[in-house]
Amino acid sequence: MECGIVGLPGSGKTCLFQALTAHTVAVETGTLNPNIGQADIPDPRLREIARFVPTRRIVPARLELVDMPGIPAGVGAGHVAILAHVRAVAALCHVIDCFDEKADPVSTYSNLKLELVLSDLGVIESSLERARKAARGGDEEAGRRRDTLEKALALVEAEQPVSAGDWSAAEERAMRGYGLLSAKPGLVVANVAENDLRGDGAPVRALREAVAEDGRVMVVLCAALESEIAELPEHERAEMLASMGLKEPAVGPLARALNESLGLTTFYTASDKEVRSWIIRRGATAPEAGGAVHSDIERGFIRAQCYHVDELREFGSEKAIKEAGRLRSEGRRYVMRDGDVARFLFNV
Ligand SMILES: Nc1nc2c(ncn2[C@@H]2O[C@H](COP(=O)(O)OP(=O)(O)O)[C@@H](O)[C@H]2O)c(=O)[nH]1
Ligand SMILES: [Mg+2]
Image (cartoon, rainbow, N blue to C red; front, side, top):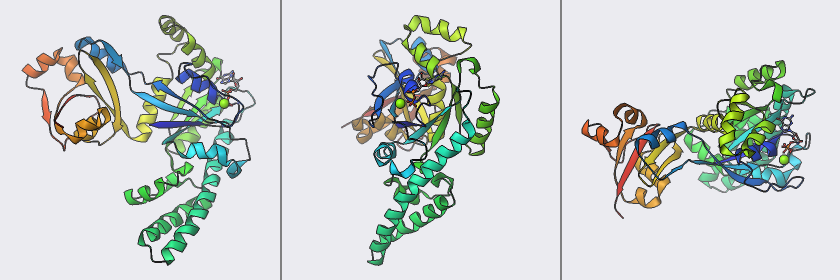
């Protein structure tokens, strides 16, 4: 899953990117190239599983991050080079400067939203023209595309994001190829000052309200501090976090909020080799989950042996779960539950 980090220049995008990727990527600044990297998604359940299933290593799922070069204010649809990168990602993370005393987070947020809507306007208009022409030539598929684009056009002309519409699965599929920015699920990062880590200041509170009104999630963090913490050796991190009154690095809440707004869920595989978390679409079936591990598993799927993380806590070992008759044997129609630990049986 790829997440694009967007926002005004100087809002702290690159700083956040470096924090999330723990400084593992040599970043470029002042160019039109995005920085691309991966962040481990911390998950307390991994350690818990490893307590009951002795293993050689723990492998967290990862989040792909694309740190976009800034979209200068007021430039809008003109910045094709930058926006082309943004069109390819699945979700957006809007970073908003709340650390500068002169910042006005609410108006920055509404401008940013408008920017995305305006950039979609151009894409929709030109695609609509092509779809209309093809539809007149008798292409039924193009006719359906035209209807969907007309619906999207009405929204963006009213300065509404495409995501505000009611879309059928078929319409969503038809639109996916256009990479419409205002159709992407997104969350907001309030980049707060070191002296307002909980975001209790009036500007951040106002932003929280504006974001909630849109039905979106907001994560409060201080990118500069997170970046410093990420540079510390592992054993010093916990102490630093505690001294700041923080429970965990921001990548945890950020990834969880992202999974939530993208409709994703987590399952685990556990053996003496590795304990690992996997992120899949909510509603994915057992063979689809197996496919996240390896395409052969999906192809040759026989069944999945599953139990829930909570049962590990309750019974203390996989053996005890089995003896209690709680090890489930699930077939191809089984919809994975968040927190399932699965072993796949397959044959190719
Ligand atoms: N005080 C403070 N400064 C920050 C914070 N985040 C970023 N900055 C500073 O803002 C400037 C721009 O940050 P950068 O990450 O390059 O912004 P970008 O243009 O959005 O990528 C840098 O000088 C950062 O040190 C923060 O949380 N607090
Ligand atoms: Mg930057």
